[in-house]
Image (cartoon, rainbow, N blue to C red; front, side, top):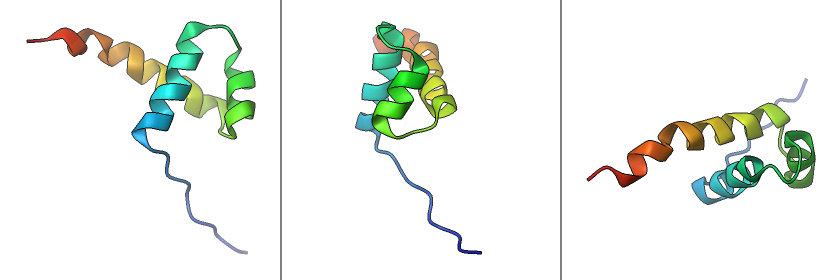
Amino acid sequence: MSVGKRKVYGSGFKAKVGLEAIRGVKTVNEIAQEHGVHPSQVAQWKRAIQEQAGSLFDG
């Protein structure tokens, strides 16, 4: 059995996909299929952005 390497996504790509999910124009499944990632990964990036949004404006 051949084991491939894990794909590593950059922070810019994660932010772009996560923000697209937050906008809610498309479903998580549509976004995942469009960008070639798993839907749970999109949901995880979306959740991470939402959780850290409050700290963006900390002095």
